[in-house]
Structures are given as structure tokens and as C-alpha cells.
Amino acid sequence: MEGPFLTNVRREIRLRGYSMRTEKAYLTWIKRFILFNQKRHPEDCGPAEVKAFLSWLANERNVAVNTQKVALNALSFLYKHILRRELGELGFHLATKQRSLPTVLSAAEVAAVLSAMQGHKQLVVQLMYGSGLRVSEALRLRVQDVDFAHSSLLIRDSKGNKDRVTLLGRSLHSRLSVQIQAAISQQQRDNDNGLGCALPISLSRKYPNAFRSPSWAFVFPAATPSKHPLSGQWCRQHLHESAIRKAIKTACQAAGVVNKRVNCHTFRHSFATHMLESGADIRTVQELLGHNDVKTTQIYTHVIGQHYAGSTSPLDRLGLGELSGPIPTR
Image 1 (cartoon, rainbow, N blue to C red):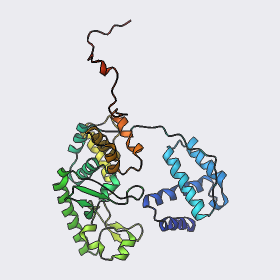
Image 2 (image 1 turned 90 degrees about the vertical axis):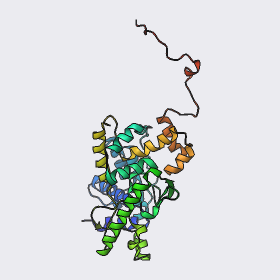
Image 3 (image 1 turned 60 degrees about the vertical axis):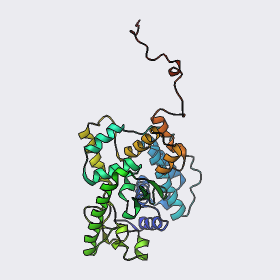
Image 4 (image 1 turned 45 degrees about the vertical axis):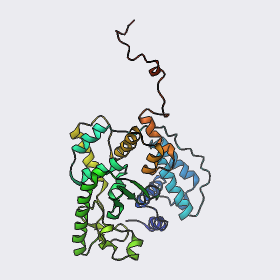
């Protein structure tokens, strides 16, 4: 049971329009901070306790640098917007993040994994790879976001609350059309039972009958209805991410792709890498992925070994080819 203090924090987070993911993460880190300080009220703690907590995470728990950043953001929100106090300069330095190259599958490996899948889960992964989508973006697609005429997808409220347009492979038109018709049929059955798809609270207030419109139906609806996390009303959400994760794990084992750590995001990484390999401009790939900075997209040039456009090894320019004969040993 959540106490009045955390209830107030949750209310403030929702008031500012933060996503459900952010709300969950912030509340988790605020609870951990309170437990770390032997359940003392955050009002009785300050910069010293925050610094000690962050240092404990870095030195004792060895958390990743991005995890440290989320914890710091959660506590900064707590003190600035809830307790109305500035933490000031903590004198705490986040761990230096070493650049790590993303896991990328070859085209043959992607084909093998997809061949080991079937049904709507296969279609979700095809969209992730074919359009460079995050798994959450693929699952949150609504019927109105699919534009067959222009072979494009509208991605709404993506990371950073941004909208973007990305491409839709023409080879998916037929299957996606069938999936959309199935989703609309599911919505009609739900409407007959007084239910509908999950909608943003503000939109459902402004348009009370929007849940009956086929355009708002999720392309990949969940198997069963559930309660809306904000309104508490019964509705049908989209398919849960865990279903795709499990399907990918099973497919990788069946396809024999066991020498790489493959997850949902691997297919987005593979999309970007294969687009660059095929000659796509890096700025185009940046726009399709929704990256703010082209430096984020440039990581994929390192994956394919093309750090600088047109760069070649000086040995290759000698034109000697592969030297033959035995390699002498000492």
C-alpha cells in the first residue's frame, strides 16, 4: 500500500505529463533512497545523503552509468518539485561511460531468426528490423499511424516525446493489412461488450466515443482486457513487450543464433547498420531512427568498420593481393 508521500509524488509526476515508464522508474529510485536511509523521510535528508546513495550505487552495486543518471534524475525531481529544495553541487561524478558497440545481426542471421517465428510476433519483429522501431514503438502503433499509400509509419510520442515518420517496407503491406483488419474486428467485439482500446486520459475526456473509432485501435492488441493504469477502467491495451522478448529468445535458439546477445533492440541496431551498408546517407538514417544528434547514429559506422567515408587500409592500395607461401616461424 502506497503512503501519502509517494502518492503525492506520483500525482506530481502525472501532472507534469511524464510517461508511465518514467513514473515507475522515479518512484522505484525514490523508494530505494528512502530504504537506504533507514526509512528516514527525504525531508530530513539532503545533499550529503543523496551523494552517499549515488556513491553506494556506483561503488557497491556497480550499476551502469545510465542507471546512475536515472537515479540522480529521480532524486533531483523529488527535491526540486516535491520538497522545493535545491540539491546544489553534489560533488558527485558519474562513472565514465565507455563506448560499447551494439550487437548487430547479419542479414542471413536476421532471416534465420524471422524464419523461426510466425504470426503477429514475427510481424512485430519484421517491423522493428524493417523500419528501425523500438519494441515499444512497434507495439504502440495504432491503425491511423500506418500509411500504405506512402509506405510510411507515424511514430507518436517516442523517446523524448517526439513524433517522427519512418519507412514501411512494401513487402509487409499485405500482412499488415490482414493484421489491421483482425485488430479492428477485435475492437468491434470489445465495443459490443462495452469496452474499447486504451486511450490517453485527456483524449478520452474530449472524445468520449473515440474508443469506437477503428483509427484508434492498436495494431497489435493484447489477448485479454485489463484495467487502465490511470483511469482504472477496463480496456484493451497493446501486446506486452515480454511476449516479443520471449519469442525472440526462442527463435534465436531454433535458428542457431546463440553466439550473440540478441534482444529486441538488436533489430533496430541491425536496421541502421544495414541501411548504412547499402549506401544510405547517415542523415537519413538519423531521421528514421529519431536521433537528436548525428553522433549517436555514427556509432553504426564503427560497427561496419567505416569510421570515415571512403577510408581504406594503406596496405590495400599496394595492390599486392594475398601473399602466398608458408609463413616462416622462428
